[in-house]
Length: 140
Image (cartoon, rainbow, N blue to C red):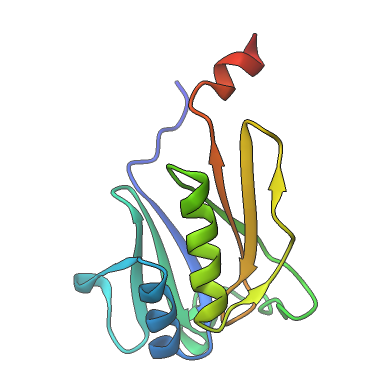
């Protein structure tokens, strides 16, 4: 039987927790207050997926490896899906207005549309919409 995680927690280092929380609130995300303090904030992606924003010093306690320099390197791309193409544009535009930076230009494959941005710490976010039956049609 394949592993089915009960919940998923992603950990991401941030320089300024308050600024990062304001940024993500501008995009429409909420935070789980029981798992938020002055060193970490639990961003709710959905009911089973969470993104822990950890101040750099706190993040460093979880690993012996050096943190990636997001100006030069990418450690991951966080991809989230939306219900509509308009929501893709709305989220990315809000991110850019809130201080994020552009990443890639929007792409449109007909059944799938997406656009990306960099958050305040240079982490890459891909926002996409895919028609509900696109996976079924592709499987044939």
